Image 1 (cartoon, rainbow, N blue to C red):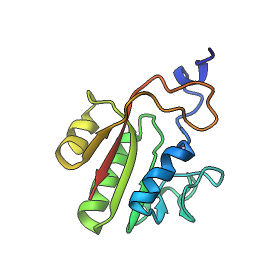
Image 2: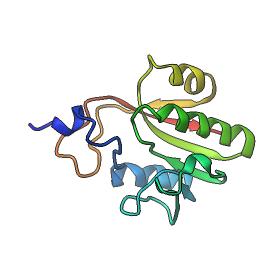
Image 3: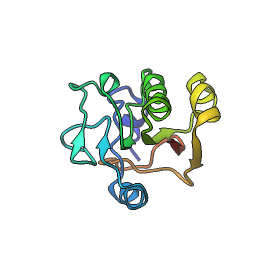
Length: 139
């Protein structure tokens, strides 16, 4: 079992499993993927790293599977603020890092949290992730 990539900093991008996303899409009917690549975008409208979604206006029904590195706190803050200030619905796939400041500052007080049973197998990975995940909805 090769989990090297899961424990390395080779990437902080974890492509959303398509079947998992399809179930959420059926419920939420997303219109914008706020942090994607051209290869893994889940919506016709999307922002890439080059677009810098953190500087864009989020509205409508947004999907967010952010980079899981140190900058995740900025993405979660932006999701919360976009819901609060712009009336966006932002559904986030996040690592369940309940000990972090961003979890306590934004997720606990403002998000609707659903913990995912088991571990997700992110796009292209041979093995499941070494961390639990949650869906967090800001509205």
